[in-house]
Image 1 (cartoon, rainbow, N blue to C red):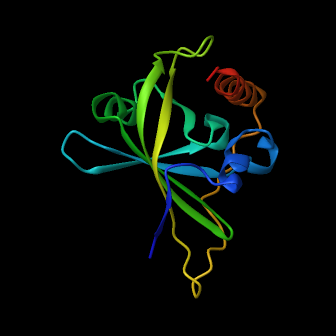
Image 2 (cartoon, helix red, strand yellow; image 1 turned 30 degrees about the vertical axis):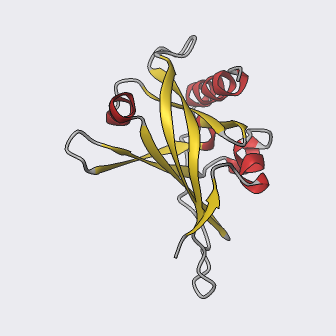
Length: 159
């Protein structure tokens, strides 16, 4: 059963989402859920390169500007992030507002700022979480360049 922790990130989550040690999060996904125009939960995945905590109550994230998730966030502003990895499992609920319709030099990505409203932890003592969702990218230089440009754009966005 999940436990309400408050309306700010824990130190552990702030460190994990700060982007300061992005290499340790490479290949790990953050699940995000928005609400579609029929009231259904709409899942999507982001990499840690697309999600950066600015402080304990604000997180910036980039989303494909024509995606259903971006359209849902513009319409409702509601988002839930599932941050799951070995030994940890958090649900972060917040309100998202679009800061930029396009990132500089990356016109297909929008920038949103999420204000944290609820942070819940879900850890069952008899059901240890052993991993989160992981992925691998093709070893293409152009993909790596775009990923790094996206990360740098989100990281440098002022509070």
